[in-house]
Picture 1 (cartoon, rainbow, N blue to C red):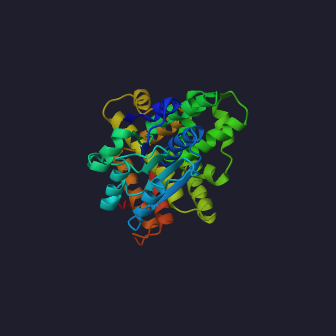
Picture 2 (picture 1 turned 90 degrees about the vertical axis):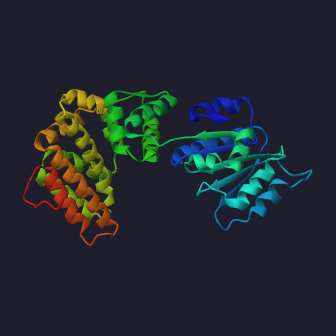
Picture 3 (picture 1 turned 180 degrees about the horizontal axis):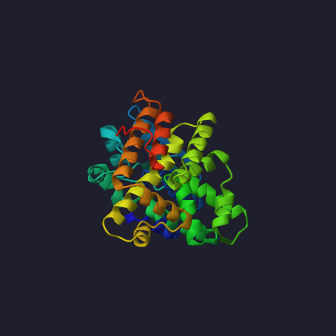
Length: 341
């Protein structure tokens, strides 16, 4: 049986299957889907829970012994298998097949896997489990989907937010779904019903995080002096270069898409709408940067981001913070540093 993540809750209210396979690369979603299954299992009397971390050295005999244990006093249990590779191997495949030839009604299995390909889904062990259980696959939340995901999560708390607030929160948590969930939890604890842009700005109180976003905002505005000052503060605070890079690189990718659309004759407002940029402040920043820089300039900035990434991981001998300074200057539209890309 194939279930969409949003269908799982309704399914669990009806009955429980012998096995559930949760597959995807987003840790938060894996955790929350697993929590739903664990809660439903406890409600049905599966009070014991065993977790098995599966790797190449795992002894599958342990699982078989536990799953086949028969005792008048044994509790019904949930057996959770975490297979980080997504593949149990030959021994694991045989073990899983044997378990589900005659499933023990006192067991429920939860397999937590990363995103798996068609090859895994076509394997004998997967097909056998799929016949008697449910497969729930989920995909990463893309940038353009994030405001909607945030809105739905807020709705679950009987909260709502306007488009500007959703856009800002998405900007500040892009690429980190756990951070988005934590920010939503903070907003919930404020006791608000309708969330505004000012509420989002006020909820992100960590100074270092704020300065990371302030760096990108100042660079997009073309304020070179302030950008370099913020950069020096971040370096002095001991941040890893990848932290400001992650934010600024995301904005540069968005800027590149925007400049390419405008360069191809799309109006600025339509381009922003197409890219789902609703926050007025970000709209102004992108418009200003696009008038200052050509698509080629922005591509050069993106290439420089790649160099910074390599340097911060010691794959290049260049200084990552020096390269970040060059990136900021280039993004501000200055030409005092010779092109390196």
